[in-house]
Length: 154
Image 1 (cartoon, rainbow, N blue to C red):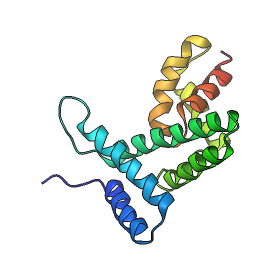
Image 2 (image 1 turned 30 degrees about the vertical axis):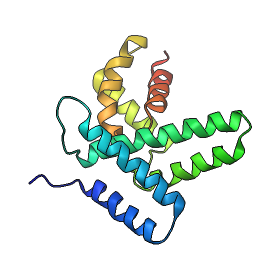
Image 3 (image 1 turned 135 degrees about the vertical axis):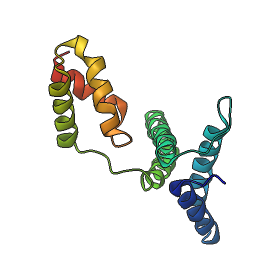
Image 4 (image 1 turned 90 degrees about the vertical axis):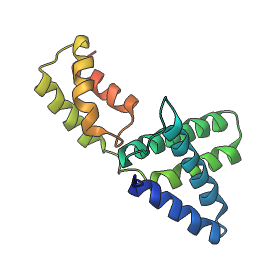
């Protein structure tokens, strides 16, 4: 018997609670998140049970979609839809690890640069490879990449 990840179980429990409480926003958001998780489980050649880390990756991707959609709606002058996307994003954030502060990210990147001995634009790849496992789910790739490029002067 394969055990369900704790995070997925929490999502399902919270969905059930939200439905009982008739909380439309949470119900809608958690249903969408669980659908994304289930889609990820059956993607590829073989169905599999996701680990908590995998579930965090899926939720991070969904939260990013919400931020991008909110920006797009806001830019198009559709404030109501933009707010709805931000609200869904806020619900998803509750299930994600706390995001790294700028100071923490700067320190992690500096450590990775020291660790790899990288310099200049050619060092971006090795530094990203070293720093990504350390920030997993706690900082967006674009933010990490920008900090790496800034510190390497690329």
